Length: 199
Image 1 (tube, rainbow, N blue to C red):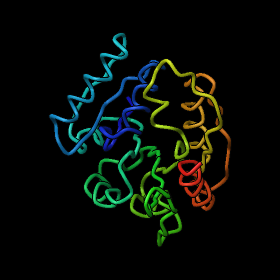
Image 2: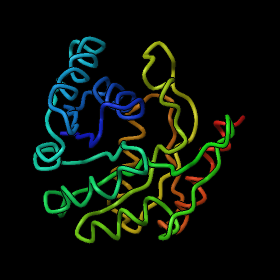
Image 3: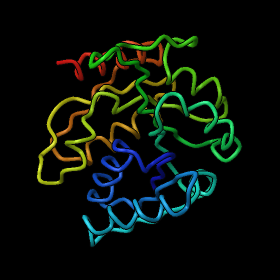
Image 4: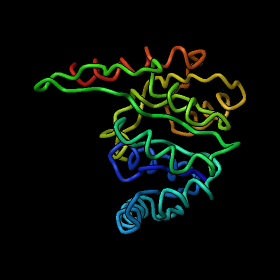
């Protein structure tokens, strides 16, 4: 089962839809059970032959086998501190790209660890953190009439976990996983997102 921590935002909804369409059972997490259930129902309506449920973040962390972090960067630390025990031994896919806005211009946000993904790994020493999907459009993901095309850069310090995530990428037609090395490279990948927004 694939779980989404903070799965009620645009990126979480979009990735959850694509994962459900690929045949995965999906569990949507939120701090609010009502919001989680509402989002799960939305995705279920868009993919009626799939299995999508809602739950609190802590229950998603407990029951899902692979987890996506799909919260804004500002919510990452508090979320992971809340659920880190439930994530031990699990693959955690970090989609977070820290950024700020000056007017309509997006800029990368400095992170002490170097990247949101490395920071997540420091907070989750017993988990296998993989950085991926930071540059994938949430708008496109949520429109199932759009055929996703492009590369997904995948970084991790854990080769087996990285390979598992690359296989998940391939489950979305026309997306290509690219082995992008260790989490040291996640900073560069995260910084691409503000550039794409500005373009």
